[in-house]
Image (cartoon, rainbow, N blue to C red; front, top):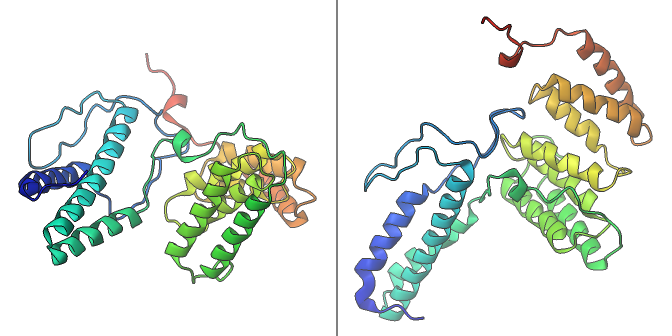
Length: 285
C-alpha cells in the first residue's frame, strides 16, 4: 500500500505519538530486582504517567498488560517510520527519506527485550534428540562470532559482536529445538549474558539452567557458573548452596577444580548465619 503525500501531517503525528508513548530505551539494560523478587504479573499500584499528551490509565494493570502495551507501541513506532520513509521516497524528498531510514535502522539496532522470562527464554521442556548439520554449522558460527568479539580476552570485547553471537545461538534454539547443540548454545548464551551484557545475571542463570535441564550430561560447567552468579552477584545463598551441591554430584568429571571449590564454598556458606528476610520476621500480633 502506498502512502499519499497529503497524509504527511497524519503520519508525522502518528510517528511522534508512537515514539513518545513507546519510551524508546537507548540504554537497554534489564534485570529483575532480585532472583526472589516480586511475583510476576502482579498489579503495580503506582506507575508514572507519560509526560505530554493525555493521561493513560495505568493503575492496577498487570505486568503482562504493560509489556504487551509497550511491545505493541514499539511495533507501531517502527511501522510509522517505515511509512514515513515510503512517503518521502514517493514524494522525492531524498534527504528526509534518509533521515527516516536512519532512524528506523537505529531503532532496530537497540536490544529489544520481551521482558517476561517465559518469552525471553526457551521452554525447559526441549530435548536434544538428533544431530542436525545446519544447527551444527550455526553453533560453530556463533562460537566464531564470540571469538571475533573478544571472548577469552580479559577486558577487551565488542558488545555489538556479542549481541550478534547471542542472536545466532537463539536462532539455533528457536529453529532447531531438537538439535543436540541446544544445550551448548544455552551455555554460550549464559556466558554472553554473564560476561558481556551489564545487569543481565538473571538471564544468564536461566540460560545456564536450560543447558543442564535440556541435557543433564552437558559437558559444560553450567551448574557451577550458575552457582557462582547466584553466590557472588545475586547474593542468593540458598540457591547457591543448592547449585554447588549439584556441581559436586554431577560435574566432577567436567572440572575437578570446580568441584573442590564447590565443596569448600558449601562449608563456608553453611557456617554463615542466614540473613533475615521480611517473611522470617517474628509476628508482632
